[in-house]
Image (cartoon, rainbow, N blue to C red; front, side):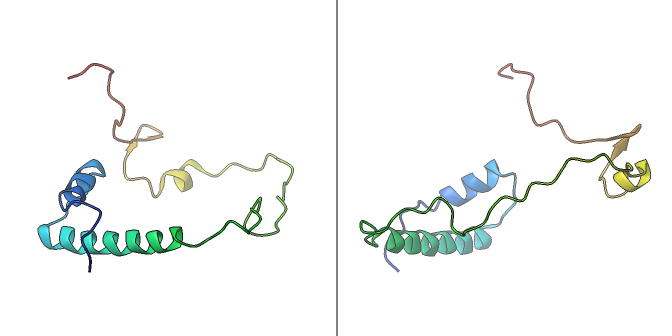
Length: 103
């Protein structure tokens, strides 16, 4: 395979940003996969599309809109059954937005 357009340090960096743990072997495999994907995209980019008319959507589909009707709400137990953590009656989630300071 020719030289990859992505640096080998990119995979661990992306994994850290995505909060994924990957070992060196997995990083190498992912690097190779990304290099193949980028090569495929590059091949697609080489296709001459000048004579093609752009499509407004990939398929001739019309949106199906339904009336918004109130129904019977689900029981609280049914709503929270698959939640990883519950506090009081609410689903507990980790904080993902900081307080705005640089610490």
